[in-house]
Amino acid sequence: MQQPNSNAPSSPVDTSQWPQHLLSLHEGAPAEDNDHERLRNAQLKIGVVKATFNPGVTDALKNACIQELLAQGVQAQNITLVEVPGALEIPLALQALAQIEDPEPFHALIAIGCIIRGETYHFELVANESGKGVSQIGLDFHVPIANAILTVENEAQAFARQHIKGQEAASVALHMAGVLEKWA
Image (cartoon, rainbow, N blue to C red; front, side, top):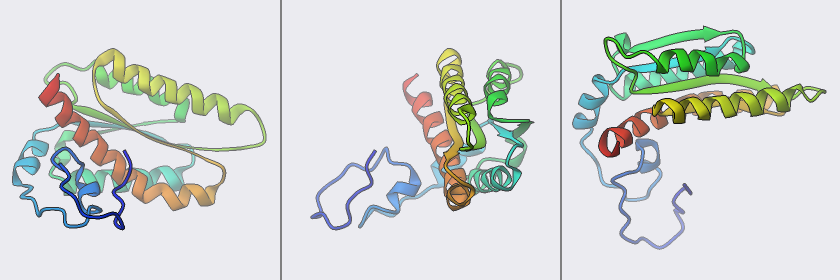
């Protein structure tokens, strides 16, 4: 989805389906009462799978993500964190969480990792296979998965993205949980 152009002439835009972080970018966005959304979010069960490789980045991604989940009303006791060694292990852990039905299934899952390009083909292998696995688990188990596995050229790019991508992952997970609640 493109971000609204603040230089464009103002026209009526239906923002009812926009995630909160995009609403704030939309000039003249209506002030919304978030009580209903926060109440719904308080009932959601969210699973977060974090790779421990590149911990300086993945810890920051996780912290930003969990802070955003809490800020949007998710209860701390409804957030499950699973740590795995690297990005290639994330899909298997997501699959394990997606299979949990009792006492209640997860409403959304979040994948957190960081893959920094090196000198070999390993970067492409890890990026492609982890991304494919994350998408496949979501489709196979009909559970939304926000993919916050950064694929970057260097640490500077990772550090520049770690906070916003953690927040966006939380917003995407909550938004997609709402979409599936409404349309599935």
